[in-house]
Each structure stands twice: as structure tokens, then as C-alpha cells.
Length: 320
Image (cartoon, rainbow, N blue to C red; front, side, top):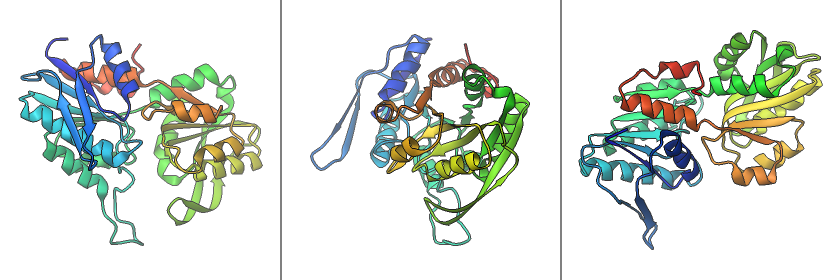
């Protein structure tokens, strides 16, 4: 693949390496350092003039530092005369701050701010995965490819859950109903959803199960889990409603604060996440966490974008 360069930020170097290996390329040289006052400095270590540049940086870990590093890397490539700069952001930062709620009407819409910052820094194209709300694509005036982990999730379910034909796909909240119905249709099984009432962010109050899980395997599906309060409450609800086993499948496993303790104490057979966020440290402390590798989906999206091919094939297929 001529005229293409792939750089990885410091948020998820392992994913960057997997993507470049899959494409048969070497990761571009980049030096990231911090001055003593914590300013980020990025130096691109090779020529990018006239090249098609892809920068892989996920919204995880030290989110603000990593976002700033991405913006600086995009700008560094742009002013070094790169022909096109694509930001590959597997987990989009600030995606949950995407609207004003009825209650806190003075809340910011930070996802829109991040979109503006990426555009102003010089990004020509964004590749991301399972946006918290797909309308975030509309916050940009540049093309956005929102890829889905769904094909990889379907493959995992069929290969790892023997009783998948007798399962119910469950959404832990009403917002994820669309995602869950799509998976349930593809597997030709039933779906259920849990309606939750929140009193304040990150704290769940009351839960109501809509649907039947009695004597079935329940598979909770969501786009992200942060402190895991919702999915752990949901798992308890499903067991008390008669589910034989409970799995959780999440695209972005943020797992901050008490998440790992909660998962260890909960009644999950397995909590399956993708590697949009590095999970190695968390897997050491929690044997229930399993990882689906999605580097081949991102790599194929990069290859197709570079060659001017359609990306929509990836919405329903896992590249071999």
C-alpha cells in the first residue's frame, strides 16, 4: 500500500501495532514527550508530505491528555503537508455528553466540542466504533465512518455460547433497544429490555424487566460499561427472573472506579468486551473478562478508505 502512513498515540499502542501488522505496514515513528509543566509535545519522526495518514488513538486512560495528544498529532501531520489525515478513534471520548437533559439545562454538549476540536486541528476524516449515539456523526462537517462491533459479537456468541439458540438478548436500558433488537433479529432469538430510573448520573435507582428470560441464557448487550452499576444490577434482576446463565457483551469496557470489584461479585458467566480500550491490566484482576479483537475491522476500514472502496461491507461482516 503506497502513500500510506499509520501512527499510534500512547493511549493504545497494542491496537495500533495490531492494525499495522494486519495491513503489513510498519508503524510510523513518533516521539511523544511531556515537558515538566505537563505540556504535551509530539514530534513526527518521518516525512508525511503527500501521504495518506492514519492516527490511531482511543479515548481511554488519561482521556484529556490523550485527546490533546491526538489533536497535536493531527496538526503536526497537517502542517507537515500530509495530503489527508484520518483520526482512527475506536472509543470516542465524551460521547455520553451528547445532549442537554431536561433536568440540567446548563449542561455542556461536550461531544460537539470534541468534534469541533478535531475538525479545527485538521482531521479530514474520522473512523470510530459504536458511537454512544450515532447522531454524533452529525456534529462533524467531515466524513465519519461509525463501524459496528455487532458482526464480531455475533461470531463470538455462536462460537462460545452452546445454547445460543435458546437465549434472550437483553438491553440494560431503553436507549440500547435498537442495538439489541438488531442482534436478536440476526440470531433469530427473543429480546428483552430493562427500564431503569436514575436519580443521578452513575447511580441506578429502580429496574423493571420487560420480556421473558425464564430458563434461558440471558445475554446483556450494551455499547459501554463504566462503573458497571447498571449491568451488575441488571444481572441480578435477570437471575431473579429465572435466567439460567448471564453473559454481558460490551463494545467499550471502560471499567473505572469500583467496576472490577462489582463484576467479580456479580453472577456473570463472562463479561466480554472488545479491545477498543486496553484490557490487559483489568484481566489480571478479573478472570470473567474476555476480549474480542476488533483490530481487523479497523484495519480493513483503513485499507478500504485508502483504496477508495466502500466500507459498508463491514457493517454486517467480519473480515477474515
